[in-house]
Length: 443
Image (cartoon, rainbow, N blue to C red):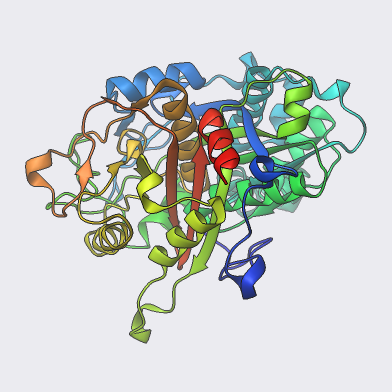
């Protein structure tokens, strides 16, 4: 499902100064252009809209269940995180429906929600002042399946002309851009689960180059037979039938992950421009790094730890500054072990609280890390760490301080970690706005 191409990665390793080691300190804190998140739009299996999702997450509401979008009986895996009850006609003009995949409809609504949350009217912006950078893992799979079925059964003259772009990786970027007249620099990142972080980093680059606003993040969906086969084929999808036990990352009985759909779109702004219009930032995008793992049979270690360390250096932060880690949480024992080892190497055993709210939604491909960033920003805003459900502390397979019920905390810095199928790693450091300004003053 994931093409081995990306936009904006330094040869797939890391990027920036010092021979490709870091991107550099967040210039919005130490003088220059900084990137802040001012709006969030969420469409998720356990909540539609940001605040509905956030309440559900703090309450531990599980959005995983048996697939309803098609009959899953003949497939080895039958659970998914679906965005249930979504009626696109209530949210989008009818002219868009024939030309959009289910995934794109969700993304368009998430973008609308994010702009409203930011109090930003795109029509009031100068031409070319705003761009769109999203992540995608599969493009419009459901649309593509439907049109291929027409091709096979009825002939080419029955295939929609919209198939030419509705399936494409960049379709969410394009449709959001057209809908809101956002003609600034735009693009798409294709790095599966890591894509949401990579897209956010690309948005930050555009901000640093002088673009005031970039919509970023990711929304994905491939819950159709064609997309389902592609996911099940990787051998990592959980086959359990109980939503309460199927997806249990870091658990001694972890047996794979549950796929899901949805994600988040974020309004990312130049800090000074946001302040000028009176927008209150939710979080500062302070640090980022990306690495790429060597082949599994190479005998060389993975590079997730390095991604975390470089992102911290990019943010000018030490490991002790991190108040919470939003884990990738693959649910695959070997991958869980690799992540737990990387976190222990950076923070020490049980060195900082770790959480994985995706146990309530499933892994959302390119939407997963974007949703984690949104969740981390909300956690910074409200001073509470959301829970990892369905994982009891006594049953943990690793020495982690895994948060299993909502935990109030003084949060100033959050780390979000993501890994994409095929070896992609990414890490983003977010600061609470007031904490970021204090850190910059001290520096």
